[in-house]
Length: 128
Image 1 (cartoon, one colour):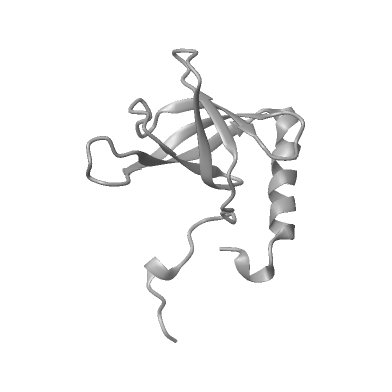
Image 2 (cartoon, rainbow, N blue to C red):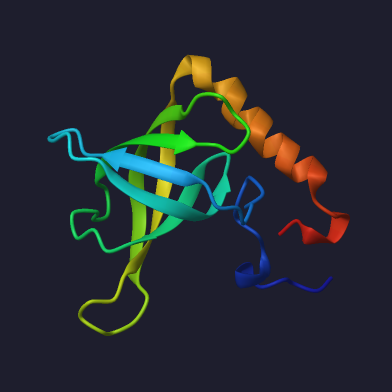
């Protein structure tokens, strides 16, 4: 039996959807609102581009996700899982991966329905 190298095995538990979603985030220690747009999103996390130097690995943020087609934003708590600069230039933005730690109870169904509707609307070959 052939052995498949670990680098070829998908480690994600959920489908990643490449859809723009407006994200607003704050840090627990201050009320300044920062904004971004997702590059991708899944049931357990999201990725966006930012110039925000405050976002460092393990930072905790309060999230508000303005999901298209939903009447109210989804409120969640996240933790920065990783941060990568997009180039070596000093002023280069970074991609940031946020792990969703918790979602307000009354927002869970809205969030999951949004993701499911996106998955069911995709052509069969577009899921990655």
